[in-house]
Length: 141
Image (cartoon, rainbow, N blue to C red; front, top):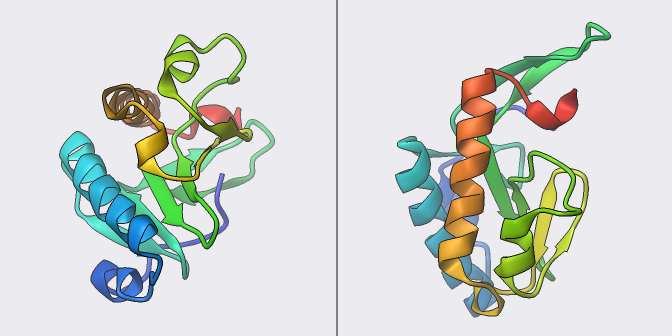
């Protein structure tokens, strides 16, 4: 779940400020991959998240909001991908991915060179499918 909203800031303007050469190249790869998977253009969500698609979610408690279907952020020390839709324990795709760490909805990568890009794409495809089919943030429930 994110507390950010889409902005009018061009994604290319944000990416031009990513000075780490590897992180910038990885961000370009992720923009291409996530655009292909989602069929949606990249949009800035808040100051640092690049999202694809737009979902409205509602918790059983009544709390609701908006989020992208899939997203990532090229942070200073790692890439943060908002693509996890279930607990990482026992996830066979994550087991095959390569070097990574996880949070509740986040997949953390130092560089794309550390992972199998086909497996990463499958994770991104699963997140897009599950989030958009459910019509809400599946991990918010």
